[in-house]
Amino acid sequence: MTEQAGKPFLYVVVCAAGIAADVGELITAAQQRDWEVGVIATPVAANGFFDTEAVGAQTGRPIRSAWRTPGDPRPFPPPDAVVAAPVTFNTVNKWAAGLADTLAVATLCEACGLGVPVAALPCVADALATHPAYRDSLVRLRGMGVRFGERYTGDPGEDGVRPEFGWERALDLLDRG
Ligand SMILES: Cc1cc2nc3c(=O)[nH]c(=O)nc-3n(C[C@H](O)[C@H](O)[C@H](O)COP(=O)(O)O)c2cc1C
Image (cartoon, rainbow, N blue to C red):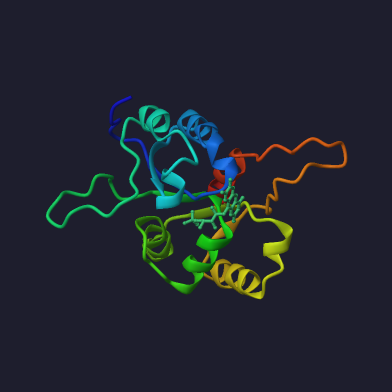
């Protein structure tokens, strides 16, 4: 797919959680809702957590993970909305603390200041979610206007089946107005 003028542009920030392997489902759903999509992955996520080639082919743009070289043009247009999915314990805490040491976290840190809708789907195990830093980070980010979906643990339900991640929740959160 090539650039499609006139469509709103969605940044999808992908972090290093196992469920990231299925992020293509989010891209498909976003494109069906008429978003043009650019993917920004954390360096860990880009290194084996999902098929960057396939997702790049899906969006028609290379996956971004490293900073551009000064003087190079910005590879993506400015975002009309930003989604972080899946977002990890690590990235939630860095985002809230303003530690913009990767392109992915810097993008998230900037997003609320741009005044565009920002949605996040955390994928964080129960044991990590009890950490006070995580709880504080959620409070801080919600205060900044970030719209959080329910935390996904990846644990199987009582039936032994792992629940669906529900990628479309991110798009529904953006639609909330
Ligand atoms: C197979 C695998 C699955 C992981 N799944 C998760 C996860 O679901 N949630 C999470 O917070 N961390 C998970 N981690 C740990 C993160 O990858 C690790 O904290 C990493 O530093 C996160 O980097 P990022 O936030 O920059 O993407 C997983 C690690 C591995 C090896």
